[in-house]
Length: 329
Ligand code: SIN
Image 1 (cartoon, rainbow, N blue to C red):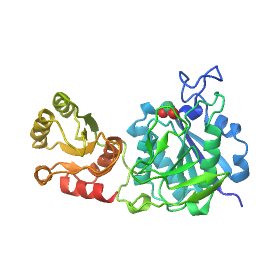
Image 2: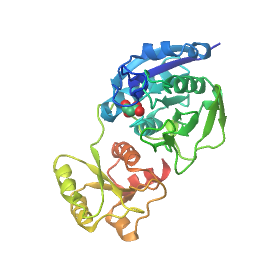
Image 3: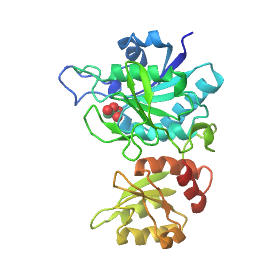
Image 4: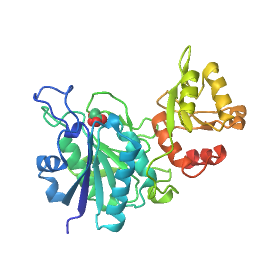
């Protein structure tokens, strides 16, 4: 019997259109509906019984915590209460890594959840959306995809949600996992896994979003030469930001002007996680900074650190406990 796979569409370039087959920029993302995506790839019906849901239809640079919560709740319902065997989420590539990691931390099922998208709009010559969608459905339909956490499939690569990062602005090969490498490869509908993830995910996290209507307010600040973002930190804090992720330089350093203000705000209970603006490698904190309550994002980039921090704040405000979440997830 064919598996039942749900496609949850949220927009993005995979659903983008423009009136030229040449154009790969300047299109409208999130123009097509989920039915159009399914009709464009009739071969997926040979792999699975498909049911489509439209969760949003946006350019993913406009993704919000509310849409991410709506998406996660729907996936949990489909996989836990309804008899759906796997889920494919079509998503804009700009923030796919954030939604993928969010789902990886809050989905309470070990059935396959796969995110995919496209770098070229549906109207483009050599559009990549149809093959990516086919690959995602093929992967979601396979039993060996179970219990691997949420996955991203782009350009025939299989990536973990935690590791996947958009590393090219326009190229079809836009995603990689700079610190871990890919989990595997998908070729003509067959998956080849050659790597695995050691971090806890999905059913093995304590994060429950069932009763949440919003997430704690967490923002990101960059550090740079002649840094003036201490001013921004103050303004964000006064505007209700509960926690900040700092995209530090190197292994997590912060300009002294910004750091001075962060220390003052931490005395008023601002939570500060230090990540890095460098794409690979670990952040390292001094003992003195740890004692002050700074939290180390480890190898998570700032946008992923923000996702984990929002969820951590639904459980605790204690920096030491939050640090432990960064070690485990
Ligand atoms: C988006 O993220 O919605 C637009 C860009 C893309 O999907 O590649």
